[in-house]
Length: 236
Image (tube, rainbow, N blue to C red; front, side, top):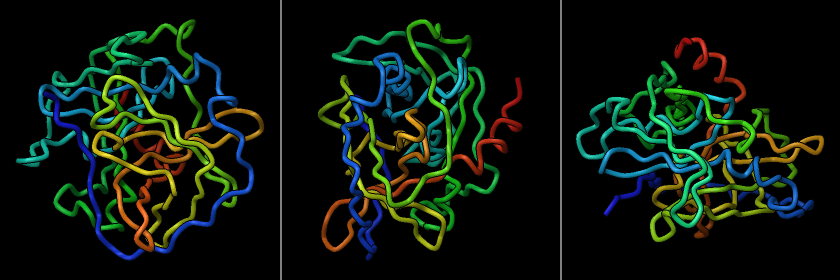
């Protein structure tokens, strides 16, 4: 049985304000766009959620690249990206040939919010995914005050992604975001999606689950301001 992965953070957080625009995410995204989101299998130890942001680049959380028990950085040979996995069937299953994490991310400081804002990783697939079947998602800066949604895999629903819509989002002083979308084990790396000018954009990735005023929330990391760093680090 695959053990799913997600950080858990226990702290007092201000709850984000619920957004007013509540169009379901599924009605704003095409099937091909939804299939850009897939399950990232990590050998036999676990899985995370990840998103195709170009034909051969996948975005996820940096902590997904480490063994949860030993904190050892895992070899890329241990990863498989299952694009559009639904009911156990993927549109495409790809190997990973290179991976880059943000240089400021420190695995030893997991759970620290100032470190968490760098919990982002980029994976280069062994070959491009056929974009006739899958439409990669663009990346953008979140527009606070508007709703977001999350598409993710998790424990007890590992073979089909769950879509949450109309979640609120706020920003913490440390640079991470709090959303009312809930995280579970396996949600790490899931895209926080916002519809901007009619197009779905990945505005952050889920890093951890937490509680705000006793209610479950997820903590997410902005990606538009760090993607250029990761792209340069991973090479061609």
